Amino acid sequence: MSAPARPAFARPAAVLFDCDGVLADSEALHNRIVAEEISALGWEMDAAEAERRFIGLSWRNIVPLIEARLGPDSVPADFVDSIVARVLRALREEVVPIPGVLEALRAIVAAGIPVAVASNSSRPELLTKLHGLGLTETFRGRTFSYDDVALPKPAPDMYRAAAAACGADPHHCVVVEDSVTGSRAGCAAGCRVLGYAHATDPAALRGVGAEPFHSMTELPLLLGLPAETLA
Image (cartoon, rainbow, N blue to C red; front, side, top):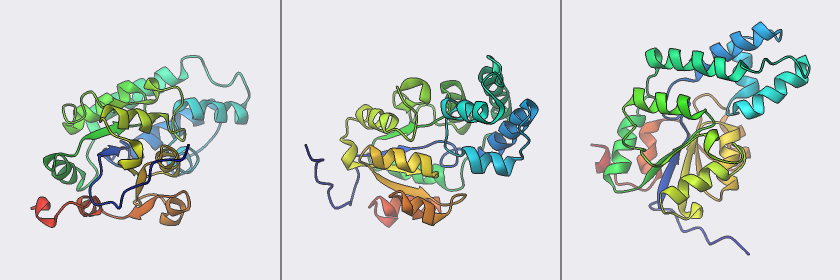
């Protein structure tokens, strides 16, 4: 069966947000901690290499990569739990919003467009970030982590679930992403994907089907909202 025809985009049925690098400016913090913890296992890397290798991936995807490099018994059973706990402690002190995203989100919500968040973070990490940003109520009932679906990104599961929570057909939704992995997930779900190209090569985002943009101040206009909604 063919997918429903995508309408000419003037206004989406829902907007589905990634979290890290889209809502929360937490990538640098996360990459630093990941690099330190993996280096302690014996795979030396810095934050830049951690970002290059693992951006957009969930722990379900990262642990097998570590084991492939260091051996099948290289990752302690409590590794993920301990690193998540460390990230949570840091996030309670350091989480800040991506510049312009809170204003863009307010304009989208004020226009009556449903929003959801779908992140390859664990659920405790995601909820901590949303709390720190003051967005818990904005996304209540429409918050999805890799703990909530069968397969994390780049599989489409999370964005399909997010669209369903908004009562929307994924083909009529817009996904806001910043990674190739997440953009693949949004496209696989059938959504239009806007790729925030602040840390990822715009050509790489475009190569997997996303439409790159460079500032969150552009987002409402890209969604077809009138300019006065930004006032």
